[in-house]
Image 1 (cartoon, rainbow, N blue to C red):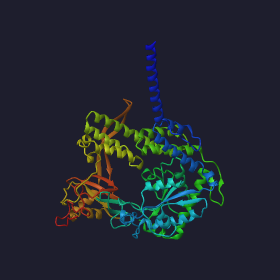
Image 2 (image 1 turned 90 degrees about the vertical axis):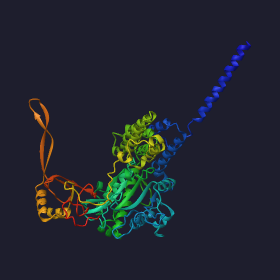
Image 3 (image 1 turned 45 degrees about the horizontal axis):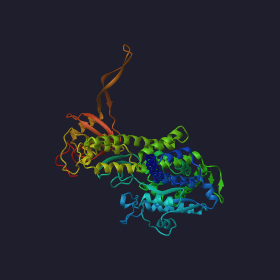
Length: 592
């Protein structure tokens, strides 16, 4: 009896101890008390239920409530006397060194040497004047930029995109807008020229000289909408603005006809409802002249303002164009759900949790792949595919590292990084892979392939002494508008008179013979057969840049058109730009 009681006591003690452990474990992993402002669709609840991290659950719950408060309850909030907040992003601005980011700092000044900010301020003030007259709109920004918008100052500081997003969230903003002007990038801007068509010496990102054929002047407006906005509002606004501006007589840029969704511009990754206006090219002398005209600016801002109010009315059923708020419909529950799901996908990917990001995007595809929102979710499918490919490479790299195959592991880590696009949404994963590459001594010291071998840059030592090129080295042949082939050859190669005649004849009669497989149908075998054959192509040299190769008899054996070509004296010959033509007189100046 005593023994039985003793055993029962031991069992009771074990039972109590087990219950304490279970209660403690249950408490440590209990879900936080989540209070949603509105009932949530099953897709959102499914994602939250699958999440094990309480801090993440809290964060994404706040995101969902914020979307409901700002977008789903827009009409109710305005009825209560609240305002629709627009956050005005300070475009570029002064850097700590005192330079304007849109001018000296980036070599993107206008034709008259004014920074981009000069014109941005002119347009932004006009737009602010319209927005501030609407009693249902509240414009917010940094203190110094608000002073600029009100005309009290002409100076404001540059702030990071992340600061803009943080301030917009704290303000409960509906949309971020940013007023910019376009310019030919430093990669394309010609030395000593101003956006003029023709063949110019330009520089790439490394500072190397590139000969480039600029076919057209760059002109027209662009509106860059955030591709991460799965609600479709940003895209709809950009398209409506394009239509309104065209109706007012303004010309859209050729790129997507003035309304561009491009992931490279999705810097507001944590604020998908966002727009960047590019209201013209200040590198175009004619367009810069227009941007000084108050009436021209008025057309731009009137369109920006009316298109914004029109899109709010169409997409969220709220009309704030008059003296009272009018309800014209209800916001689509699908649109709100998509905005939430996309926001959660971005949250996970940006946090470096690619697995959860893929899971959310699959949820989006499952419900909306065959819906009217196909355009809005297409970019997220691209994100998912990039993540999946990167994950496969990363898993292979981890496996190789465990097997101490460090060179191969290093290569697959590079491939994992390269599988991700250069979009800001992937920044955390890029950083994670980079740290593993550099942080692991075994992997970082592996020398199977160098960075240059994995990502070739085509680097050349352009600055070394220039010597006469061999005859068979490829020729850079630039042909300007209305220029004869004879004059182009004379400038490119500087040959003597007799050689020039021979070269002109060769170029005018150039025929490129190539061997390739030709498909021939065999009636006997009832299928197509392939055999080697010759094709002859006549070369017609028009305006542009050509890379031409000659044989030892000065016969053209290959010729191809090129939009641009590096001015590398070790790869090409040209007397006009490289001073290394085989045909030029040796006494001619050869210094670069």
